[in-house]
Image (tube, rainbow, N blue to C red; front, side, top):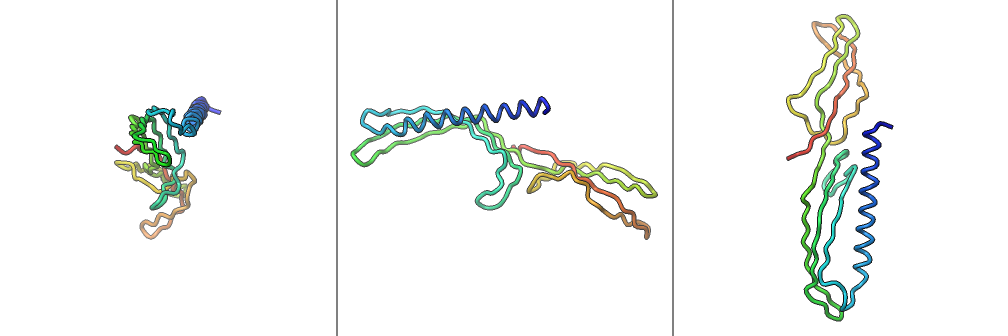
Length: 160
């Protein structure tokens, strides 16, 4: 396993542990609804989605979302069957990363041999991550047909 993969795995596990700790803390606070419960609650949270594949209005395979935030809740009133409160949340750090296609590579081994890379001026957003498996293609030029392969090159972008 590469060092970068180990760091990424460790970061995911640490984030999951933090999330579980915050959740356990919030659940223990939420169970105390007596008159003596807290009127103000501060909280923090970490959000991570490795693959947002199905959304309300479509699909976005390969989209990664990461956020870090804090919340403040204040109870306004507490009656025998009704409780009222308001909540404010801030997310000072949030990233969304989408898959893109940055270009493609062509290889034609027959005469005349040709190999080249086509790079787009700006990355093209795609619906799912780009496969790096070569695809069979045909080049037709001057009444000749040449068999070759095309390999798509993918990347990611963070919209601003």
